[in-house]
View 1 (tube, rainbow, N blue to C red):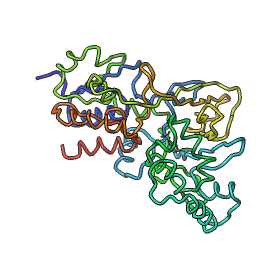
View 2 (cartoon, rainbow, N blue to C red):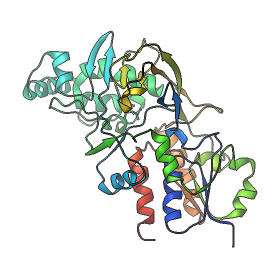
View 3 (cartoon, helix red, strand yellow):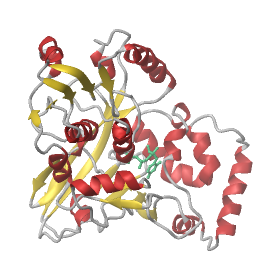
View 4 (spheres, rainbow, N blue to C red):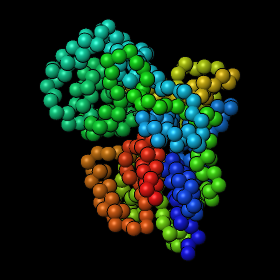
Amino acid sequence: MRRYHYLIIGSGLYGSTFACKAKQQGKRCLVIDKRSHLGGNLYCDNMENINVHKYGPHIFHTSNKKVWSFVNSIVEFNHFRYYPLANYKGKLYNLPFNMNTFYALWGVKTPEEAQAKIEEQRKKSGITEPKNLEEQAISLVGKDIYEILIKGYTEKQWGRKCTDLPAFIIKRLPVRFTFNNNYYNDIYQGIPVGGYNKLINGLLSGIETGCNTDFFENREYFESIADKIVFTGKIDEFYGYRFGKLEYRTVNFETEVLDCENYQGTAAVNYTEKEVPYTRIIEHKHFEFGTQPKTVISREYSSEWKDGSEPMYPINDERNNSLYRQYKELADKETNVIFGGRLAEYKYYDMDKIVEQVLNLFQYE
Ligand code: UDP
């Protein structure tokens, strides 16, 4: 008998949730992570007594009751709602695209007027079947919003033209004809009380873990100690990049402590014009309604992933998707390896979908 039932590579949300469920069923797990801390991109630093989302803001939102009950069984969640603003050339607009946005742009006061405005712009564009993000955006909200609130932001975030990006990315954002600034449509939303490290520590409580531990530096040994492997890293790396490298976007954070209590009055302001080099500014204390005397902000700069930086967003364009399918074919043949999460499945997942997947895996076991 091997020492562990599962060796889990990566302690992000997929790995930690998997470990938690496996342990509940009496399985022996070892979770390893090459970073010096657990939690993957959920990890928060503490600065000025504020939880700083070190790898970008994470807001938990779901409409799945089982997922919500599960995460709440680990840690309590607060009632945070995400109301980001967009700043375009010094003027503020509400997100996601809703009646407040339409009013600020066009002065329209009723849903009927707003719909007529969008319809007029859609007709003019002549788009019937959107083939890329640009066409999808214009179809959804018209040319004005596309140019003011989408084009610059998206091209900065992805480093690619909107005409070369897949349409589904923009479909993540709701469009509403109500005066509702809540970024998500989901029934349940919030941030763990006390921060995400509490969620991760709760999931991993009583489980053997090793930080600063790189699977690839000792692959043979690690493959020999467990019956099964749960791999949450980059799938192309798992296969030695044999078909070529998948591309990712990363974000560099310029984090600053400011000697003021409240810098921007909300958790996020997106800078949607292309001339501002960063995509958004996050003010971390607002995720937990902080009243600390100082504040911490992060400017986010998006760039292409290179070795040594953190891969964050898969780039689901045609080239990368077809490369991923080659790796997936190999992965499907594995009998003792489970691939899960954004990097191993090369998919732009939200957190709740990760938890849902793991809960489903264990449902019948
Ligand atoms: N987006 C945009 N303008 C904004 C915010 C988002 O055009 O002010 C687009 C952009 O293409 C982005 C996509 O919507 O990639 C999805 O945004 P989301 O907020 O879901 O991105 P995430 O929070 O995952 O970074």
